[in-house]
Length: 120
Image 1 (tube, rainbow, N blue to C red):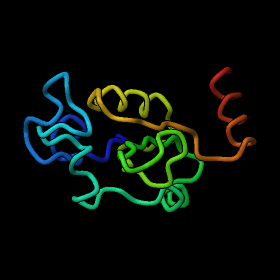
Image 2: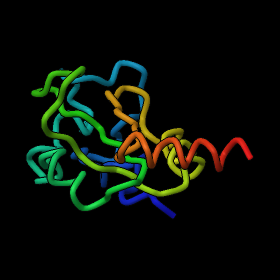
Image 3: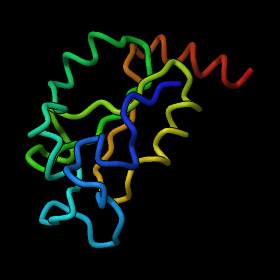
C-alpha cells in the first residue's frame, strides 16, 4: 500500500483531532488542519529530493500554503507507487481542503511504456 501517512487525521500534519472535520478548513483555520501544522512537524521536504528516491513512480504531494500552488519546490509526500490505481485511491483519502499534486516521476519513454501496458 503506497499510503505513507494517515490522510484523514491529524497525523498528516494537523495539530488536533478535529482536523478536516468541517467545511471551512483552510490556511486560516484553527482546527488543526495540515496547512497549519505540516511544516512545524517537519513533514515538508524538497520535491526534487523525493523525486530522486522514487524514480518511475507515481507521486502524491500535499503542498503547504507557503509554496506556489502551480510550481511548488517543497511538499509533503503522502503516497507513492508504481501502480497508478493505488495512488489515485489514496487521493480520495486526503482531506478536501488541501492543494494536491499527482504525477508520474519518470522519463517520457518510461511513461509511454506504462501507457502501452495500460492499454494492452
